Image (cartoon, rainbow, N blue to C red):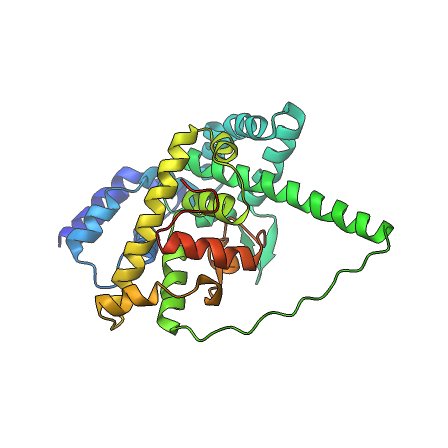
Length: 304
């Protein structure tokens, strides 16, 4: 009863009806977000408390836009169009490049690609756990990084071709047996992280970016990124331990499992850590080494 009452109140306050989202659709969106971040056996009280942390109005706006509501898009453009240009200019450090970056992102937000006859909008991945503006800043920063890496990769390949070099095939070393529960649990914990947290982890541990660079892209102080990385490392270790014990391990077994050589982990880090926000950007080998370190709660390659 309490949960139903809360959902009714949130629906009325959210403005979902103004964008053509019915009560059932609104409830489905919140259930989807809760299922991603809460345990399957979460109590009604825990669910209600979680809903209280969400940016409900911004979540509704984003999901209504992704569903194709014209009124929602009008509202979105009124609130965020100029902010997108400001963020793009800030990230790209140049006005024309910033506007190009913002326009490119807008196309992704609106959804110019189709899948199974449906328009795919990046806004469908916004979960309301942080501000929509902050989420947009993170998406913009990642798109800027992706563009840079695509250009750098093409230049590198051109240079190798001119020099008559061939890309050498590498043989992967045999992978040691690792408890499957550790692999799946680490994947689950990484996948459940908010987009900004995945971006920070990937930028620092996988891409080797400095704290100052990441802070600059997200418009925060360097110390904020340092604290975030420290908290994330502790959070990852705690969550993995808890989930391993829920899957039948004793605490001692779970702690021993986390002592495995991270190079032996067959984690889908490339797919997990980079899902939605970070498509095909980082090296799988480096991912296994450094994200594994983060999950174990130890320092990164430069130390914090």
